[in-house]
Each structure stands twice: as C-alpha cells, then as structure tokens.
Image (cartoon, rainbow, N blue to C red; front, side, top):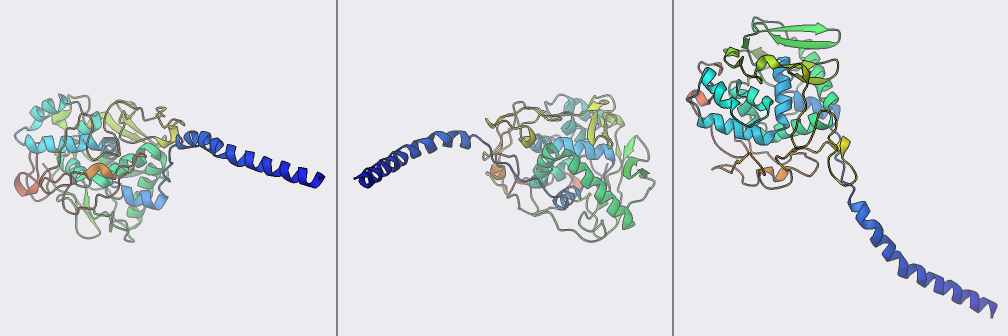
Amino acid sequence: MKFIKQSLSLLLSSCLVLTTTPGAFAQAAPSAAQVPLQAAPQTPEQLQQLVAPIALYPDSLVAQILAAATYPDQVVEADRWLQQHTELKGEQLGEEVDKQSWDPSVKALTEFPSVLANMDKNLSWTSSLGDAYVNQQQDVMNAVQVMRARADQAGNLKSTSQENVSKQGQTIVIEPADPQIVYVPQYDPWLVYGEPIGVWPGWYSYPGLFLAGPGIAFGLGFGVGFFGGFGWGWHHWGYDWHHHGIIFNHNTYISHSRVFINRNHVNHAGGFRGGAGFHGESGFHGGGPGFHGSAGAHAQAGGHSGAFSGFNHGGAARGFSARGQSSFGGGFHGGGGFHGGGGFHGGGGHR
C-alpha cells in the first residue's frame, strides 16, 4: 500500500510539472526574443580586403569616405544630384551643395565626384564599410595601416610630386604635396599590395580610379580652393591616428546616421544607446526594400528595386553583386563617362 501511494504521488507530481512547464517557457520566450542577434565582427583579413580600395588615399580623403559611408542613402542621393547638375562649376557648385541637408562628409565628397560615384556604384562595399566603421572603428584603421605597410613593402607607396608619404613611428601618413590640389591615386586595389588579395564580390572598377597592373598613377588634380569658404570643405577634415578617430573642425567627428546599428551599444530592447562616435537620428532604416526618410531615391532602368533589402537589422549589407552598375542603375553622364562637380577633362579622369 505504501508503495502504491508513493507511485501515485510521483505520477501526480510528474503531471503537475508537465502542465506547468509550457507556461513557464511561454513566459520566458518574449524576453529571449527581445535580445537582438549579434552579427559577428569582421576578421582582420576581411577588413583589409574592405579598405583596400581606399587605404592609399590621402588621410583626409579616407576620413571623409569612412564618415560618408555611414550615410549610404545620402551618398546615392548626392551622386544622382551631381548627375542632374553638371552645369554647376566651382564656387557655384559649392554654394548649391551647401544648401543640401547632407552630412558634411557627403558634401565634402562632391569635391571628388569620381570618388562619390564609385561609392554609389559599389554600394554594397560602401555599406559594409560604413557598418564596419560604426562597429569596429579601431580595427578599420588598423587595417588601413596594414595595407599601407604592405604597399610600401611592395615598393608601390612612395612620395611623389602629387603626394607626400611619411612615417610617424609605425604610422604611415599620406598628404597632398600641394595643400590646394588633391590627387586621388589610381590603382588596382587587388594587386597593388604585393601578394594579390581577393576581389570584393561584385566590385566595379570605376573609370579614373582604376589602373590595370600593380603600380600607382595620378591623373589631373582636384582643386579644393573653390570650397574653402564652406565649413565642410577639405581643410576641415583630418585623421587622428593616435586615437583612431576622424577629425572634423578640430574635434572628433560623430556620425548621426541611423543606417547602421552600433552593436556595441544596443540595449536589451534592441534600441540605441548612442555610443561614442555614433548617435541616432531620423534617416534610413535597414531591412526594407528601399529608402525611408530624406533620400528619395528610386529604382531606375537597369537597377534593382529591392536593392537595399540586403541590409539586415544589424546594418550589414549583402547581395549587391551586379557588376558594372550601381544598385539603383543609372549610367555615367558627361564626357568620357564622368559626371558633375566642376567637370572632368583629360585621360586621367580628374578636373
């Protein structure tokens, strides 16, 4: 009898556990679902491949590109705006750019239309660069220095009449030889560093920025004096290699883009805490099929209407592999396949 009572007691206890456990799981599930998925950081090798196309640019231009990459929606808008305003030159162009609502970094890149167009045409790469800078800022800059050291060891990074290359300890600094004229080096980013590296998926080699072979060349320079009177111009930018930070107007640059989630500062509700160097404001939101907010970009002939569906909620961009066109289509405008920003002339593709 005692054994029977113990058996019944055990059976009833087991039934009680089985009937209450699902409820316990149901209560735990919502809180677990609130924890956002964490994207894996990019490896040093991946970051080196990512920065390869810009690592040999002058320091201030690298700073502008990294900052602007956190605004891929504005990059697209600014490039299309330049295509539609090829009649604007010099200071008149600067005045019209100054009226736009773009981030200062995007405005600054209108001084270098081929660089801006390259970011538009390789939008997946631009987006990945912006995401990496938001979440792995120091690692990104370490990758830039690694690639510069590799180019130096390969004999492809030397001072020229266009730019000065110097070393400050272990840091390689690249600056224009003439502070009023900036040359954007032309090179094959997959060959210039000595041992070939993997080509970024779907990479489009933009005319005027690409040189077949392992060396570096320069076209005509970009005069930056026309934009000297604006607060976003060339001389307002720099890079603090010691602190691994972009300098804008003698202060640390802070991106206000909301395109990418700073995964180092996401709280358990999936929102923003506005970590160092990145604070949220209204703008583009990842995950959707297009732009949301001020960009106003739309798919064009030859493009993909779902281009930005490659953004996941962590801000990473994927799936832009259409070679030879931007994710929103649109060809090149103007003589020699270039467009906007004071006009391009000559074989070098620079103004």
